Image (cartoon, rainbow, N blue to C red; front, side, top):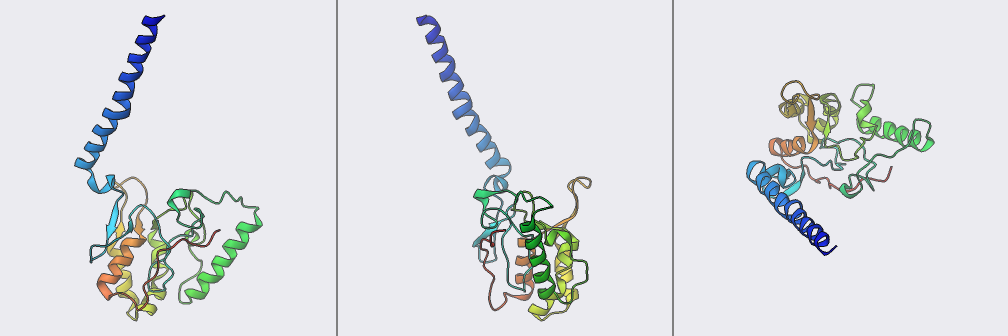
Length: 205
């Protein structure tokens, strides 16, 4: 019995050291050496060197001079500690009311935009943290941004077009636009608007 206990203890200690200490240290070190930006959260800095967010986590932008992302049902909105969708089904009155209110708001804030409104601007993502839009969803907002920044729509469209990411390896996924990257590019090109938007949690959906 004693011999069996000693074998079990040794096996537990070796497993703990290998999988609980050595393996995490090796993987963390390799990640830091090979992919330091991704390993540290894909953090994004503005031109002043201040960290303004992550390329992987969406934020709430309410200033009309900025590109706005998808609505979020994560916690109180874009909460990385409460990632998830609303879990509301197509028969949910709460979901219909929220979507209808978003449609009214989008039409009011984007009077020059064509109809129909891109569905992604009304629907939340499964994670609630989606940092990207399709090019269609981004270009749909051009007229509002151009009006707020008092520049031609063509110049806004050019900034967005320059920040369209293609399919991964040319075949995986769909073309997409990172909302934060476009907003930083807009500030670099045209300067910050008078009132910079706050990246804050959205209202609960």
